[in-house]
Length: 201
Image (tube, helix red, strand yellow):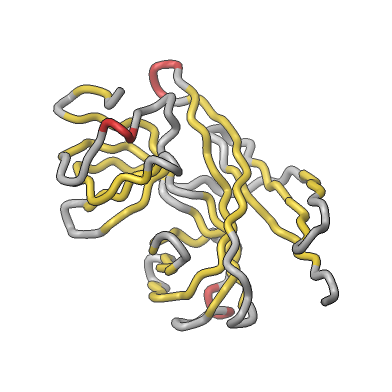
């Protein structure tokens, strides 16, 4: 079978005015991957703050699913320098400050396309002198909902269903509900996680 090459774009958003667009070139099957990084200015995801209930802990990916006061479930990746998700359990009441997920692109793909998840890391300073890692993620997902007014898209991927903000330069008229797409987004990333007023460590 002929080898298929795929060009994967991943964005890591910094906490300062300078943001970086990382372009990661990979090939399927037995070929080796090569990376090429290009810097460009991109918008920064909003910083959010909420009291939430832990729904599920994913220790293998250092992430946690939390439900906010309006019932919305958010998957947040947590750098071990910020908090230890292994110390959390379903039902815990927590206070979370985080940067929301930001969708950079969503390109329609063949329905039989293999699921993929590619991550690029970048660090940026957080409160208290700690450093937060932000993850750029590319995944094959199904578009479940589009909120044009709020510029939000809900994507059902192989592991999670996430609602992401849409970057200002990404047109929403190129996708529709039910489309299977290759989505590239910056994952929601915790800046601070506390329980009963104490950092979860």
